[in-house]
Length: 416
Image (cartoon, rainbow, N blue to C red; front, side):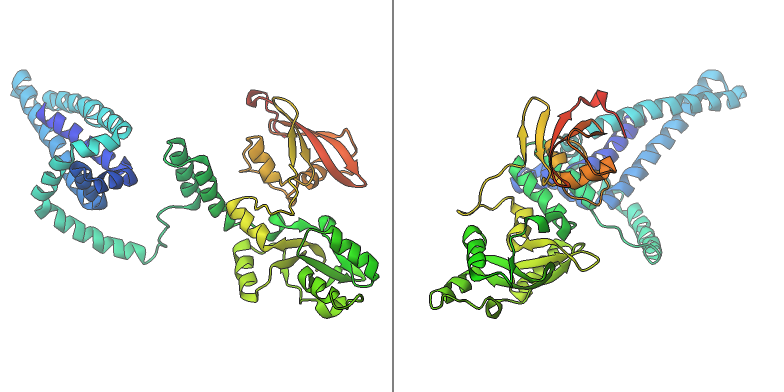
């Protein structure tokens, strides 16, 4: 019985120290809880502790098996030694497996944070007692690990997906609120976001034709809420510079006929696949606030500003000139009207649909709808995606301006 209880203790200790939340332990240790402080120190030296636990566990199992064999042999008789050994082996296997392994490990995993504090002192004593045996083993492990790491790349302590899961978990547990969680998740997503995912598409760009007369130019500038406007010559695919509106008005004070070309700043061009952390670094180095995004053919795809990049981290930034325009309207309990310009990943977040397996060249709802319909769409055309039923509700020329969406219950989901 003592050997079985010892085996249960060692098995529970192994799982508890492997499953305990080190962040919670450290927090409790910093608050002055002695058992938490000792438990945290043990988790910091887990390989050494694990060696001691495994030695103790094996010793308990072997001793228990030997004692049970002797007891059963005394009951059955020495003349039936083979039968005694068989009975002892079967009995100890069942008892050790159920009461010494399965039950203790499951309970320890469910109560790891509490258990590691309860057993902190006994575990510390165990490690001290077994130090003479553990040290040679750890030296051997260190030697073998050096041989292993010569041919194996070291993996990161935590992957990006694991970190994202941790953030979701601590939000669910109430350690951080939703706003803090969103900010942390945005920081993770920020690293992999490309220019084409955050740009203002060319069709929405406010631009000036260098050949426009001064009245047309003045009208565009006055109606625009932007501090910088791209200027093109012949075609929007030929951006020749960026006009700073403050510089324009400064010149306008002294002359009615402003030479736009002389005020232009050199445009900064980036490819659509460039990651926004790199864009941000380049824009800071060049001291520019706007970049023109081009596609693989060199054509103008859109533009991206410093504000667009920062909004990926902290959410929408509003100033006095911004108009608050929502990308969607909820029309019922599970129905929405969605703008064709809405970012498709924001849409999936809105309707609580995973984008894990989503694969599309388009980043807007309108572009995605055209791709899914595989033709020039018309009002009333529809398609299904997972548990979503989507209808094209408004068109303008060849553009999908608005779609209506019904979110069906998950059990009614129809996979494409």
